[in-house]
Length: 69
Image (cartoon, rainbow, N blue to C red; front, side):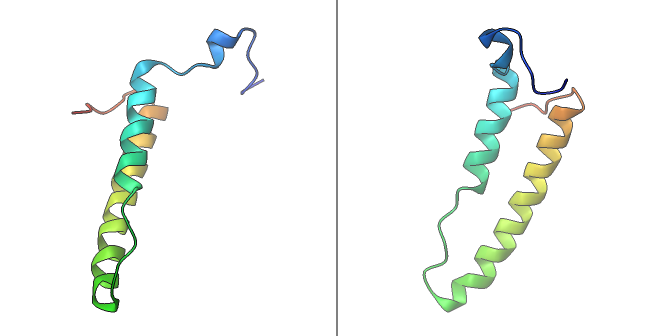
């Protein structure tokens, strides 16, 4: 069954997976816009970052983690 583990070590993701998750969290963690004019820029940047995060996560799930710098 997916998601069930025999030992605690099996539940710990590899360092490559942890690096991808860390990068995704960092990329998505931008502050909310401070003014009305900043809202459009915030939304555009958030959308772009969400797209890149989805690509990184899909690549990781497919077994080919992207290079993390």
